[in-house]
Image (cartoon, rainbow, N blue to C red; front, side, top):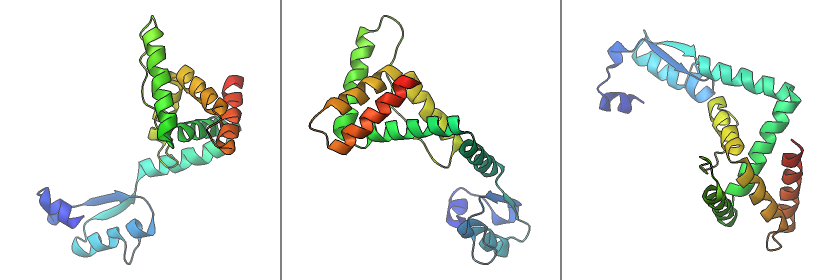
Length: 168
């Protein structure tokens, strides 16, 4: 961190605040980054990151609202199933491109985003990517479920996801 500050031409003498999460490696009073900075610049006050607090609060809330938790879990499982295999990802791309060519409107197929378990802003992008590409995603999941070259567990998972997606 100090090396990066030096490369960017930032002076420790001008440092007055530091903001990060409460992980021991960052916020630790003896050996954390904040302690190291404090030893070199006593005027640098440590504050727990408000955005990190907001993310933690949102995560806790989501766990309590079962419909949101179920929806986010479905997005995570769906995107992971497609993206964990080059073959399945290629299938998704092919189906999306076919739908784009057949579309009379402004449909533009786009890449799927993974759901981040710790950053709420990234979760929004993941949900939007699935919603925007819903038809391509569902068709891909059905193809995966029907493809006998896929392992039994993958086909079962795909059938469950397809059932959930059709029920929403």
